[in-house]
Picture (cartoon, rainbow, N blue to C red):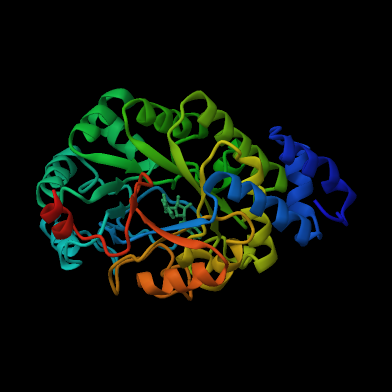
Length: 376
Ligand code: V47
């Protein structure tokens, strides 16, 4: 390591080189440093130890199957009451038809929705998941967040073990990382009191991992959380990964303020975004991937994040009008990015683009299910 301007980062650089887990105080120093050169180079070295020169993306189809939700989270601009203007609730046939519009050359369907008393039920999801697997067997199902699984379990009076066993048997490959918000009871009481609590969020992911379902984890930052709470959130995830491995990626979610009750918090800044990516890469030594999700921080910040520890840009999304969580909250990102654009951005950042699925199996760029079937 060359010259380190911020003296607070010197002992951290040593720990990173020796593979020693970072403490809460280290995390705070990383989040607050002005020495972005050192921060970036430490995070980049940590990234390269995990994934070398690779940066991942997935050809996928993204769908919000329902925005009907009564959880009442204050950061949310997406939720609607079922009779409210703008409520969208897709019948199962429509969800499958939307995925099929994408053709067959994709490797993941990513679906999240609200706590919708009509749609969020096993009677809706289990048959739909089986139809997906019968029609598109090469497409991995990345469905629900832990908040939705908690809702399903309570609704059907099943334990997390039972519900995850049923979802796995119907084809669930991966649980999305949402619903985590910030793992602080102070924060949750203020911002999302009706959502699954921290202990149960973590337990659902741990039970899922033991049932053979992989998962992601997120952190919503830029509202009323403190720096300490951000770092405690990362440490809770690190401990959960140690106790029950199965998290693939950590995804920092920058707050979007349009049209929700936390509007006064405003937008995150580019520097805060970059510090969060790098800090996450360094704190979460037992997570293989840090995802810079282009729709959330924007393609430009996400490309820079590749030099600050991120090694994944998420997916193409495969549609022109589907995403509503971030589009109802003011994102300036579009709805679709093609794989050539991912490759251009990744190569310009000095890395090698790699096509993946939800569980990070790798595919050649020109992989198609038809070509695979022909070569089998
Ligand atoms: O939990 C909602 C967030 C999450 C806002 O696993 C907001 O790859 C910012 O699960 N500003 C749901 N964030 C989305 C989700 C997700 C997102 C990206 C990647 C993955 C993955 C999963 O969306 C919620 C909440 O934290 N969210 N509203 C908002 N205004």
